[in-house]
Image 1 (tube, rainbow, N blue to C red):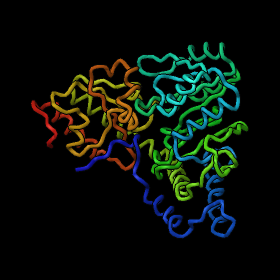
Image 2: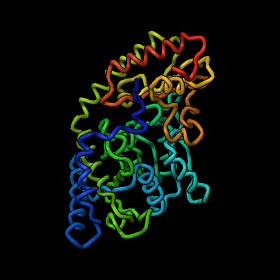
Image 3: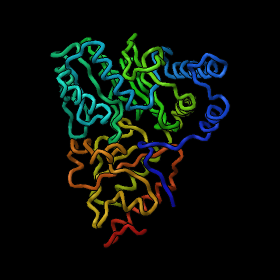
Image 4: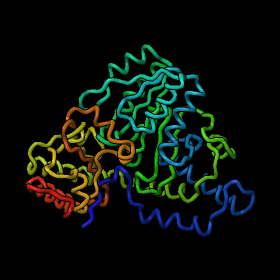
Length: 381
């Protein structure tokens, strides 16, 4: 048995996306900067993809800058906007992705910015009164708050935060890597947003930055002047083609996917509550309306075993996460350290995708129930 419940870490490549990108590895492989037919065709494809993405997101093509993924896009937005506009004061939260926290802390340590953290409640929700007080003190500052938390699934009200930042003349960057293509994203409310194709069944290694309101940022990566001089480096043509196709499919089927994932989420939460005593839910993930579809972060009782619950599930063919994939590399979840319900628990993130089924949910519930009824749990299924 093999069940994949880690779609917030990455998703499988859509077969339709694979079919779309293959010719750009084998037939249309020209360098977009080359001044011959193959190069011009590659350049045309990039510009066509940019226009298509702009149409899907109600943007202008010049507001989209292709990158290698979400991490580069976040670094680009933060470092280049701070440089361009002479920003000295930045507000973020302690549960942002490390692609936001680490570059901001590096700038703070270099003495380039003063970095503050917005207050959060015990479920990881941003305090709007605290944000307002900060904006009153630093009206020309930069606010960086993610739209959808990658571990908890909490959704930020972009319209509310965007209205506040615009009122005070501040800049607003939001990491939308987990939400774009999955739920509606109010891009009218922001200055900068980021995306990564592999989160919505596109290829790894490609994403984009959205820079709105006429923002033109200095290049983070200097080189050949690609992306209108804003991002050096030969463009990843197959990746860009795959990103575009994946985003088209995600947005076309968005409402259908939301309904399916919400149904799976309700069924799983109901089963957990019925079959496993002593569980809690981290953040607001048990709320359908306030969090990402299909993402649930559960605080289980400590398993009486020489292994973690994540390892025990893996041994039985179920792929889940103890946090984000990136937090596994960074020594644990900094997000859950801010969430009291997670303390002293086995914390597991389940993130479902459009291809997951109710039968897989039931199989996982059966295995979880067996694990908590077994006196000695091992890594042998």
